Image 1 (cartoon, one colour):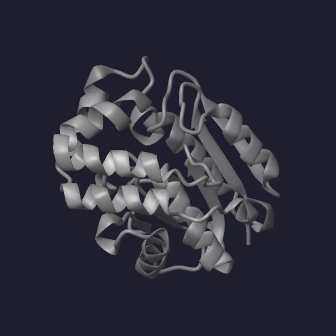
Image 2: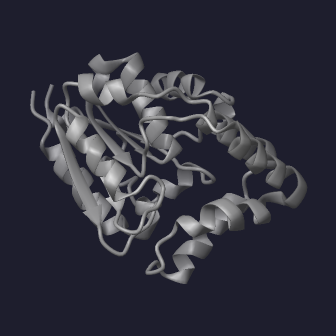
Image 3: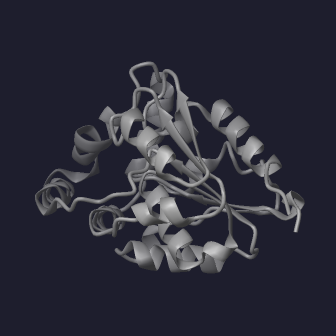
Length: 233
């Protein structure tokens, strides 16, 4: 197969949905799949199996942001033979469970609503350099989710398995992308993960936080084009 047959599988971050990829959907017209993951339950394994079933090809460039990156790692664990490249944005491969933080987030949604959860957990992840209108766009996307959907997302994130071994074992390119201003997991952790991968590359994007597809779509699109063009038979 050639790179002409590469298919993009785009996996969104919390607390957003598939529409966060609006700036990436035209990179591979008619060969891009971007599911909204909450409908698949509250476990990363269910997300990964369902997202993989939605993809048609066996030459997948799987791109995940935040919890979407965790889903991408789970897909790579399930079907490494279908992965042509993995792009992980603001993703932490190792999970150290923190039930207290999970329960606090769920309680915030239940008692304070999505506005309170946005202010507490997700608004601080943007770079101070990101334009206010971009942050407001993301906020609007978050607030159109249901509390039950975001509770599924939070549970999936906090119960995900560690997949550091996937970084070591996967034979295809693994591209790690982080905003320079990201604090979750941030450039240091991202650099360590790129070094761990057999074919790892690191991109640190200046003046950017956790949500690279929204904050610096132009830079991310350049990286993705490079990844697609670099896939060889």
